[in-house]
Length: 450
Image (cartoon, rainbow, N blue to C red; front, side, top):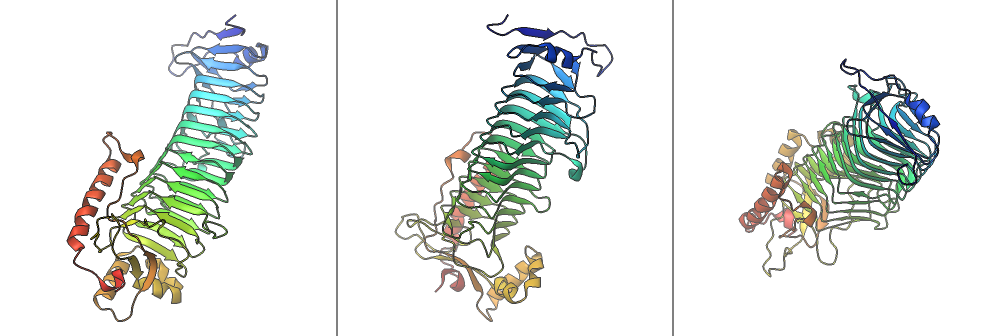
């Protein structure tokens, strides 16, 4: 006995052949274990295994459950099951049957200190309310993107905690019809959507790094989502968006680093009601092809104390431009690399508004097919020509009445770690300060609105 728990130890003498597994029947041992007991695995054991009672399945150093390339490796069908300190590998590869490393179909599971390798789906949770998942690493099978499964799939699972989950080359971390859950310190690389919300209400995304995916995070049809302290880096495959929202409401996006994406931020009908329930504060948006894309349906957002710098295009409006978003709050706007004003009173706020004007926006309103030129070298040339030879005034895309001239890097991004992302932020701020001094006397008539 170990405390109040009966313990069964699966003692395995691994065969000498590389990759060989013992013939021990893990399913028989799990079935024989009384409810509430602990089964300890040593060495390599053949799966799959189905757990139909509350117990603990844990591994000692080097413990492996190998699925043999068929089906789901570990299925949890009872509440209150604990899985820990195991390598789980070699699931089947059938999308129709959702072959996974671990399936959980009951509440109260705890999964921690797991390594999932060579699996189609990683963690597949259905009605697994209250699950806790921490310190898990997931990598998939060497398949094309359209054949991969999700690293984590939460379906009708409420109050789930995911923390310190590392994902490499899977499809999505997908939340589908889940509420009041938490995503914390995720790292997702080489996947499709790093994080994908579908009707996932009041589920914050915190302190995560989503890098080198097709999309960093796409939040759809969700209310009350807080996105804070994350890094959306180099998401450049098609469509290459760092952080996107579609038909979501009451969102708060604060203190994120959005660097090196094709499109940094993308808003489509967010907030839904257009009543000022979208808030973007203290984010660094730099080095993207387009810093921010707003569909004409994205109205009622507040943008304050963000930094927009060194983006190929600062803000792009698809459809007719609208002034229904607020670009400052309580006398504090945003920092813009195109601002040419001065701060004569030294309060950190420019003495005249920043107005982003684009000749091309007025053209796309009348000839929608010309939107295909967005982001191209031809468009940049046309904009410069229009500024040099102002035959007719360009359209005002946005007006920030209180632009910042001394932006502050959010505390979350202050680090001693050697990282190109942090170096880029430092370079941006240095360039922004010197650039403002250099252009202070070069007031462009259209940009400052005089």
